[in-house]
Image (cartoon, rainbow over all chains, first blue to last red; front, side, top):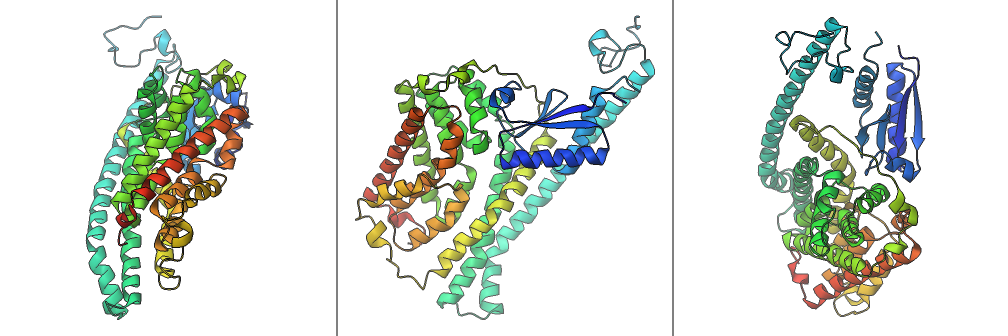
Length: 92
Length: 391
């Protein structure tokens, strides 16, 4: 298991979809039972560092994995699982 | 540590240094297991495409059958089951409602699905690449057209604006895009076509694009770059390397768009058609003719003035447009009102204030409003009211 919690960021300046994406992500994290830190990024210069032009966007371990839409909790769960597998390949 | 090249063909994942993260060196069994997983994943992906394609063909067939039998079904329901007289006002209203509502929704589903697929080819990144470094005028025309097919939500206006201007898309060209994107889209096109006929739909799309092109061009000519907040041009922009979608992903995006848009829009369609049917007999035909008819010159500026601070998307305007046109308002006035509500709004100004100084916002609103005014007067003068379906 990774020792550091997975870093997840929700990019978007307080639109209703950003809030939805935040909730979806939290639910998916919970259902997977992994340790993750979910933070909101609302500052535009900070958002632009990721080169994102559609909000909300999802960043897992500093990689943009989703822009401009809110997936279902099931889709989000598989997305997170993939990201987890990729971020810690040699830990087993 | 070296691997015999004969054992691992170049296409296979060899534990080479560059692939270290995929198959850690020193763990060949794990590397092979990972390769197996990848193959399985690929098989599953192509399987997903087959599933979506089957679903698509079945869906299209069902769509065609329903569409084909809508008219006979509506007549059967209204005149045989409900036993309404074909010539009575109620009878024709019921038949119209039962026929038109599903027809518009079916058209909407089909178009939104295909536009959803087209949109996967035009991410904002693609659009930006096309527009960066384009000269003005040609750039304005292109930007307005790309506004139709690039996915856009007004909440993304700021990151999009920053992403465009820092990449070298001229300010005026960026505005052409920002004006066209919310105003001219497939939802507006389908709803206007379904309820008012193709001429009104074409007029709206054509003039909407013209307003976006011209307003953006004028803003570009005025050289207002200094009224963009200074930090915008200094923002470092990162690169996103999003995976290129496969066809299964594109089809899924189309289905997602249908689910997303149709679930939001159908109440407005219903309301629009119901409004048309309900007020038909109760409010005098020319109730609005004196206030909003072609004779009242002040009705266009008034419509724009009222419309600018208001906000609604294209679908939300449909019931209003229906009611206005039904009761004798002039087409130019109604189109101007619809455009003003969709293209300009207070919430959008407040969002844009983060990147634009007040003077540039003022110019933006002024130039677009003048364009919309011109559209309103033009169509009132041309007397195209008779183009409205059934009127």
